[in-house]
Figure (tube, rainbow, N blue to C red):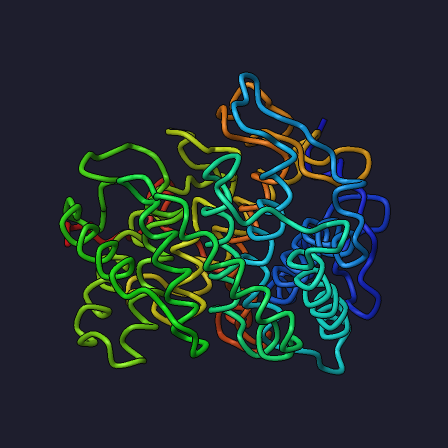
Length: 418
């Protein structure tokens, strides 16, 4: 079966040709290639909306614990009901935040955003309300996992302060702050987990709250020490061949340094150096994408799917793509990747929840710390939706990416280490 004829979707009214009712998510007909720049964005919007809505809508109603399935990996080793709801919430928020930060407008897409903004604000209130049915665990009483997903939630507030933080009632803000501070009871691992503690403190700094500078300084200094070269950090002292430079290290480290730089706590040169390293990593990432829109499945946490390209979309979001990467080639490459990943049968269950797997339903590839909520880190592969629909990332005509040009015998410039 052709994966691209498998997923049924709800049409986006007003987005001509955005989807095929009852058929596949949009693939532009040959005679409409001139409109492909618009259909790529429509595709990303429809897909992110489909992934995020079950989490945010149900949580906004105080029904997430009631309806979200608790599917776990073989050998799962955590108290799932104590950790996976915050996983789903924090990770979804981290990925959808830049798109929501655009705010509402008069377009169909803008009306979709306002719905999700409302859901996200109400979901936040539910998550930190001690008397609510969906009150979430922000302590290490049962397991250290809440530190991870509290960090993703903090990252969301850093990415979308105007829509996700500032409008919150004062009571809810204080409950969030208290929740973040309670995570200080969890000792992070001597690896990328240091950044989870650090980004929570960076969020507190950004919003004028009391913050622990030592947790931030220690994480930053250790990652500088663990840098291995050519755009790659160790996950702790050792190098691991996986995508944790993408899932956590580059995105969180650079945004932490941006907050510190903006607040005058460090020299901006530290931030600029981290961006240079992330740009090199982004060049490598783009070259890993095959002509068909696939990439190597290697290392742990592959159920996070397209979150493996979070640095690339974050560079696009902040208009920091290196000169050798045209925005259109990044867009086209990542759209191809998304179609291969999300149009595989079994990606979603019958009620629209993500299922464990990389390309479809593949529970065997899930690690022992993986449950339903874990899967929603894939939303961080959509950060470029935070760019206006009129940005060149979306409006430039489709172009081939490096893998396509190389394997079709076209001009490809030599690569070199940083």
